[in-house]
Length: 111
Image (cartoon, rainbow, N blue to C red):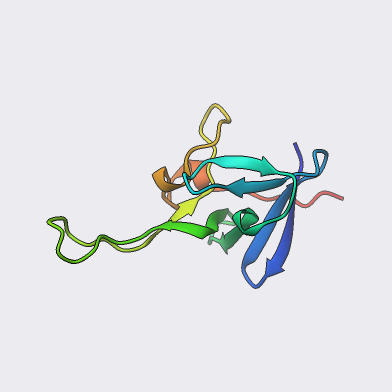
């Protein structure tokens, strides 16, 4: 389907299905869903890369670093990216990195 990307703030976008009228959203488990109403889960951080590809990360959810005192090494904060696998199914946000092909989108302008 055709998606309409609308800026809601600097670097923040909302993605809406043109025919369904629903917003693309990511829940706290990293799953994508279609929301009838606009809310904070519908906001994505848009990054434009050198080769013209865009990535979209949830503005609300991210993986936080491990706390001090745990045995594991503390990692950097990781964003949860919007991604679609090779079969066209959505992947969970926390399983995707920004460099993976499944998270790179090539937007086109329709007249």
